[in-house]
Image (cartoon, rainbow over all chains, first blue to last red; front, side, top):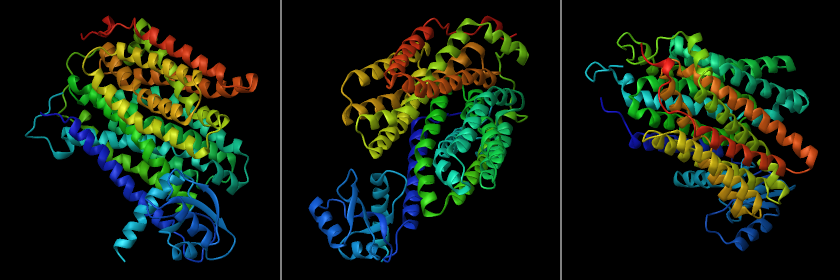
Length: 122
Length: 409
């Protein structure tokens, strides 16, 4: 009988991580905010966006920065005026998501994946 | 154990058995690692002080520790698969009861005692007891490494999923999802029934001692006592760092987000460390690498607190500790099988694990107690260094051969 080795381990761990990415992307999709939403939220931009470009969009949308994540394309922003999510999108953000109780950096990466998947099916 | 290729159905194939066992580890460890995320929602929903939920989780950890030797004994007597299946149902009932607990006592009984018992009965120790008997000796350490690495991976993947699920849906839905995940262990444990089928033959070279004799003789074996005392240190380190590193980092000006990232790094590197340790354990002596792990832990902790605490030093520390985190498990389990064989490995690992949990309790408790006394975590950091050196020393005299009283009749 031939017992499996490292290839099985790699396949199992890679498979679990792929399933994890798929589930997280789905959950981020469920966390996407409608245009009329306001309050504190995760604003996600195209990866590679310049910090001043992202800031300009946030300001144009009438939002204040709560904090920046480890990446320039993921910001936690807030506003009291209704429709913040829609304004962020209209000004160039990929999307706006509920602030998850996990690292905004990690949540933002899954949000980008969700936005890309959504864009591919539009 | 004799399994012939021709008559082996797919669900008893080696790859299926290993993958199923690892999936059980992923779920058991993964679900358990998410309970902290329900502290606020459950406390706020019922207007309970945080102590109510914390006490339930403390009971859960206590039952997990105390229940593991008994779960191991049941696995050694009736087979791991059956214990895992019953444990999964108990685990699921304990978890789902948290949705219906409208009084503290119900939460303590369900989320605390019942869930804790379920964790013990479906834990990776029980999986490893099965794998230890099923896989050939030359692959045993690798299989232990895979099961341990899978548990680590479970912690890494379940935590953000549950966090996102609580936000995307609500905490009730997240609890139902966790309970359903526990039930998935039932079919996943089925391939491990190969250990109990009529086609399985008694493993040659195993002891004929009764269980009570085996436990008595193991505790009279110096090397086993050294192993038990060494694993206490493992629990102390892990629990102290898990609970007290984030506030320590906050004291040094690190953000909550960075602390979370640093802790996640432990989980990721733990997968690599556990797997690698399994491979190393399969190539030769286990006591020396085990001793080295504790030396490296002591060195990493000393370097971390002696050097200026920066983001770089923190990431280096958490990555290093991640590599050394559960890498002790495959080697410890391997030493048990070398000294006592596989017949009572579930029970004997259970007692070693109980020592780990006592260490965990003291690591968490003394971390807080000494911080309050001295206004600093430094005394417990240095205690961790000292314990690391102690563990490195006690593993070296372990005799890495079959105990005389456990020799086959």
